[in-house]
Length: 453
Image (tube, rainbow, N blue to C red):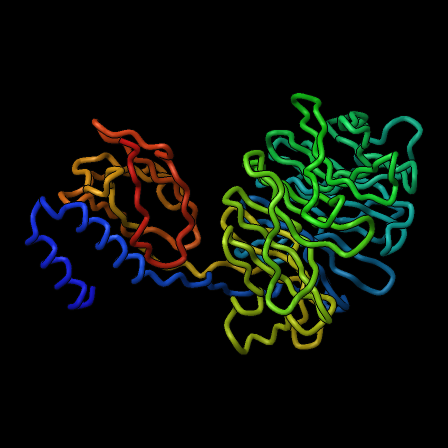
């Protein structure tokens, strides 16, 4: 704390209760002016290739707990893999008769789903699942011979599509059964392919509008209620593609006019569809994955592909979040992407490392931070002895504190990049929003709660 700041506090205290309201407002304003919001910082890891002779690798996703998936490419074939920071890359077996396999999603139990095909571009594709490192084909509906699997829940339920072209339809794989999603939206749009599913059974993907086949439909289907609906479109657009869904229900994708270039969006039940700001120097883009804190990743573009991170407020180029001199190029090529983000903000995608196309995993640099603030009345007076609790992040059992005489509370020793929930209660005061989530990257000193009465 600066000497000028301490002097301001001392002087205001001497004014007593008569100037209490002015004290609260002036002090809060001073604190907010002292806050410097820093972008998150990351280490970047080369996921590598399965075999030394493989020519490239690509990262396609990451589980909520941080298991990365993708494929390692070689002449005449491709092999699916998993990767963890502790165990490195592990190749997964191909299914018989298909030389090109990719793992698209994993859950935190280590179950992996993906697609095996006769070519790198998906010829004669089949949906597959790896359990305990063993591969098997997922079931196809009667009469179907083609399929893929794009995402898997914690319980092992997977989603993808069957068939191709105008006959392609979204499908749910559950145990020994495969069920086509036949539910339409109120406007009559139907599910073409499912790209994502969360643990609550919310499925997202691409739909088709039978009245206007040129219009993309960002479609959502809730398994529990069997209801389907559209996420809508951004201003100037008439449709969308929905690529990812978090366990908290956020949906991300790209919104466009017919088949034109799109803009990244995030959708919530409460707020509807909202544009994600484009990364600096780009004109179009798509968000591909989102976690429960509302952090999203994707790829924007202009002349080059620019992978980005959106933290709910700001959009960052991934190239700006890693140390200089790593050898990674995430900004001057057309091969880079960001396709997955875990609950711990681990990002997985593809970049160029010293000239070679490789999958990467970006892991947050963890530092100890403090979150503090004040509990205030609607008139700006401090509330003493309010109960403030925090949970989540690196606090498995949570902790509580009482606000001090000037309404202060503080929680030190938190991990940067982790998501916490802070809740306040006071005997004589109520709060419109008593619980709020925060993912601090640096010290936060103005996480205030203002009572309604």
